[in-house]
Image 1 (tube, rainbow, N blue to C red):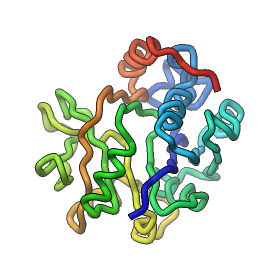
Image 2: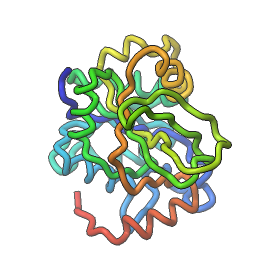
Image 3: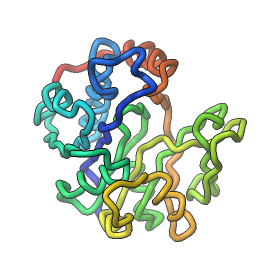
Length: 239
């Protein structure tokens, strides 16, 4: 398996949960610490030697292009604009047409997660897993639904929202082998999480990467405010 040095960032959502606080820009451009949230994500990827990023845009996609341009700290940026909502799965398929390598990462553009991407990549390859999932340990999984893990190595199942207590949740960062694209549903619009991940766990190995920290979903107002406190204390680099 080849190592991954490209990423797709999903930035096409409508951001309805955050609309009361941020309404004039798409959610991934919501200001955090005086900068667009996406600037923090791109900085983190650039610092870990990712060379190309495809931004899967949708709602207010023109504002994303205007804010970020085509280069960021040595990375090339490209855009895959949805003409109509495609869901997370359809957005990945469309954006993947611009990739060049044999493996890549996928990130949610409204989620912050600290991890070592090279170590994540190595673990998936060590296990021979075409798909890797980064997981976050949280004190209460009820808001997200839980992920069942075997020996901190493999994802073995999912628990729907409502289960209460500590555990691992899907942190919205994946490592995919390009061959997986052939196995995705052959429909324009679908959910990567529910229509692909859930059935896949019964068919083949999914690597679980649990060495993560500082999970924040800015789509929720309380977490958006928490992001201001955490990321706002960091010294941001200019583009």
